[in-house]
Every structure is written in structure tokens, then in C-alpha cells.
Image 1 (spheres, rainbow, N blue to C red):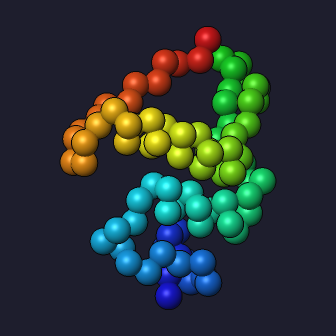
Image 2: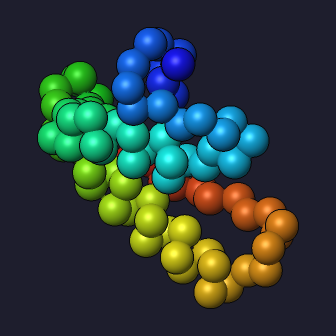
Image 3: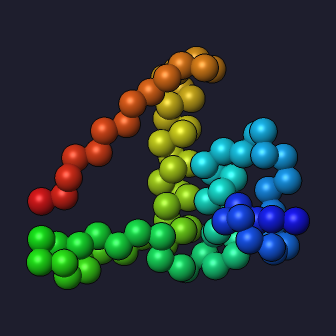
Length: 85
């Protein structure tokens, strides 16, 4: 069985037809909740912030919940994120 990273493992998402971003993030969060998902760098490439898989999952869930209150199924959305100063 392959996991969401395409590697052999035990934490797999078995039904590929219904895999969502939250499914993937849940797998990463379950495997290693404090692992860094993103590093935010300054212009001189110093780390100014980190985001763990747990926090990324939380933020993605919050955005998804908000979109569910504003959209109907199969609506398309575009999410624009301003660059950090």
C-alpha cells in the first residue's frame, strides 16, 4: 500500500477518487504533528516563521468551513494570498 507521499507505509489514503487536501494534511498531521510544513523566509532568507502540519491542517479546515458557508457544492474559488512584507 502506498501512502499519500507515494511511499510504502501504514498511513495510506486508500480511495484515491475522494482524496482531499484535508485528507493529505490529516495523514501528515497524524504521522508527525509537529513537523514543519512551511518555512517563511525574509528577503535575506532567514526563517521568520514556521507552520507545522497541525497548524496548516487547522488553518485549511477553517478556510474550508468558511467556504462551505459561502459557496454551494461544485463552486470554484480562487484563493489569493498576499506576499508577506
